[in-house]
Picture (cartoon, rainbow, N blue to C red):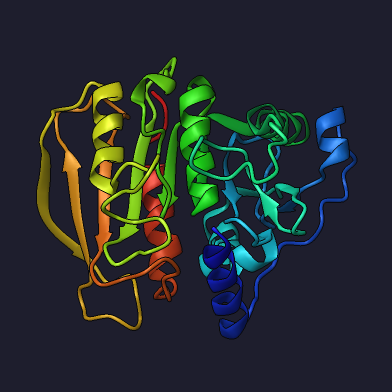
Length: 290
């Protein structure tokens, strides 16, 4: 994990950071949010009379919302597509790095056992108290440790979450630890050359296909992972196309279990803009709750 955080920070700062969201200036509505404020982008087109989608982005271990936004660049898409965008931050560990207590694999570094599910539910509550959030279109996306935490939220807060997009994350290795009370559409995006959160899996970490298979089972989809024949060009440093799209068919309406494999990519992609943020938002928006 130390190598993962060093690589992540080094690559992100080398590439530069932009489009950071402004600090929230609204005052919290509960103690959890009071102790851990979060950043937001509220699009200029926001109309309080209209239910509006909410996207919550979770940073990787040792990163911050500002640093992770340099990878995602979702703020311009929040403006152009009109969704509410929240960027919370994990607790700080003894190495002065933010983290999420997601699964037994990643990343309760100091054994704090902080209840980040409760905290992120409080963030949703806070956004719903302040804005007209469309409760059928609450989405999570996260990178690495944030991807693990997005899976955790889908397991533990499924009735509130329509879809998640995990970048280089994973669900629990033991699928019995994930007992969602509702269907959640899940997209795992993973480089097959990732050495930090291995695509093929590792101790306590299921492989990327295994992660998606777990969700196929939870969502009542077909057992086989099928190549759709569709591709994307997500990374500026790789060939075009570089991403293969596979999914489990037969899912109920609004549910999904899908895998985008970035061929030859490691842990921190150099995303093609604006293909990456628009592609994942289009995918989430297509999987609202019924």
